[in-house]
Length: 205
Image 1 (cartoon, rainbow, N blue to C red):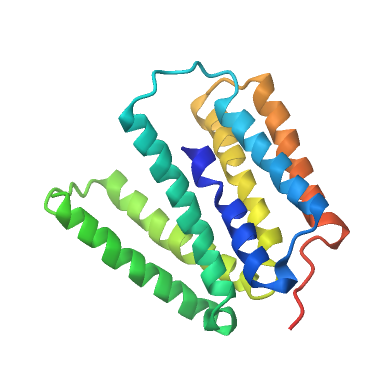
Image 2 (cartoon, rainbow, N blue to C red):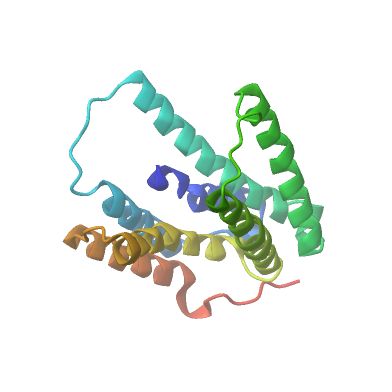
């Protein structure tokens, strides 16, 4: 699922490539995106046994890809609308308010809104997700989107599942394989190819 979710930078690059001339990628940069995505695929799919394909798993795969497309679309919307010049706090407010309405409706429709167990772990999770993930990280992300090329920034999202696996090894003691080491090298190589010598250069006003 992480592989499908982190197709978002690919959808971002495709959308901005079509809509913004300043965001068009060159051939070698497209190659870099491909190399980085191949690294993610190797990290999460390499060495796993093929399971029985069912309608449920196909539907799950489809929803994962749609989630990646939706995530990429948010970046495209921000960069191609008036939100590209809006304060990062305003953009963050719109995103969180929209997510609150959609998730609350989904919780009510699925019957989960009336079955909440507020344990210390649950409170800690909510505070971490609210303050660190939803507030601090998104605020920083939207601030960066106003100053740097989104296609180059998005490629760094490929590193997120790599960090997730690495923390799983350090915190949970998960085993690490040679395929993961190779995939990490592919991801870093892809980032270097896409970013090139002008790594994170400010975008022109």
